[in-house]
Length: 200
Image (cartoon, rainbow, N blue to C red; front, side, top):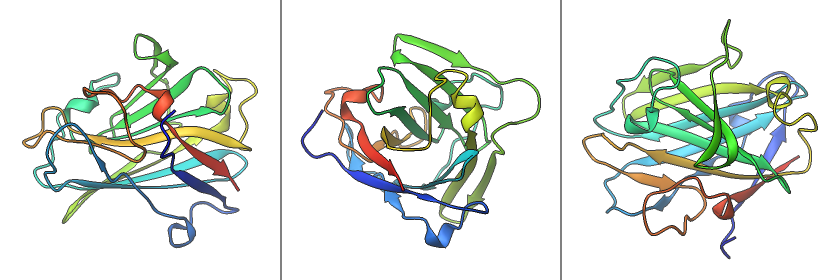
């Protein structure tokens, strides 16, 4: 783990997200390429059934090409949330583009993952919106979904996590993170570089 770990408090809510009361997190680490002006932010809260995620990008020339499940959305304008229970050796990656195309994986590393494609009605309540200065993505992660992979998963204690912004094939390729990433080349699949999120 690096020695500049950031922390974030995940607030408990009783009737859905109250964005005005939820702390803002900024993915302000510019990685591997010069700063092109893209910025990214996140807000996280929870109730007994869901972990609520809202991500926002300040970004010109948005790329939004993919719409099908399991697409490589990191090539589009993309916002990403990687997380794991503290003490676990496997992590989830949730990656989303402005079309609401969500790519989900679970495993111990980049090369050892299961890609997840839920069937039936959208269990995540995905909402995206293009704004004058960028775009936002909101979704909810059911505790019941997480327990399909980790039966002991709980909205309690701590998560190891990172938040990312990327766009491999955008007009201005870019990579940002909330916690520093110590890899010499682009690589977000590094749980050793995750920060700490604590459930309130």
